[in-house]
Length: 215
Image (tube, rainbow, N blue to C red):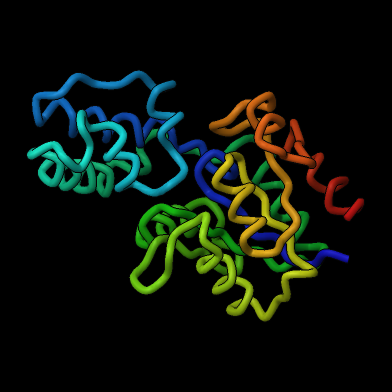
C-alpha cells in the first residue's frame, strides 16, 4: 500500500508557464535577442532554469551574453514568479484529501530551492516538505532530491509514488525506484507521455485517488 506522494511542481501542481515565459522573454529582449512563443518555452521546461536559458539563448552557453541574460532572468523571475502562477484546478482539494487520508506529501522540483519553498508556502502550506535545486544535490532526473525527500519524511521507496508531467519526471521516478503517475494537464501531451513509456496517465486530478488505490 502506498502512503507517500512525491509531487513535481511546474506543470503538475502549479501552472507556472506564464511567469516563466515572461521572465525568459524579458531577459532575451533585454539582451537584444528575439523572444520565444509560449509553446517553444513549454518544450524547454523540466530540467531547471539554467538548462531553460541554455535552450532559450541563441547558441546557449557559447553565447557571450549568456551569463548576463541568465542573471537578468533570475532577477526578474524572483520578483515576478507569482504574478500569473496558479494551482491547477482541483489540485489543492486533492492534496488536502490525501493529507486527511494520512498520506505524507513532498514537493520536489528542479526550480531553485528558494522559489520552490516560496511557492509551496503560498499555495500548499499543508504539504510536509518542499525541496528545490540546491548545492550538493543533483537535480532531477538524478534521484538525489527525491531520496532526500523520502529520508526527511521517514518514508521508503516501496510505499511512495512519484507524480509528474514530463519525461524528466518519468526518468526521475525510474532512477529513484518509485512507481510513477503521469498527469496530462501539464507541459507534455498524453500522446508524448505514451510515446516515452508512461504506463499510468491521469487526465483529471481526482483520478489520482483511484490510481493510488489501485497500486
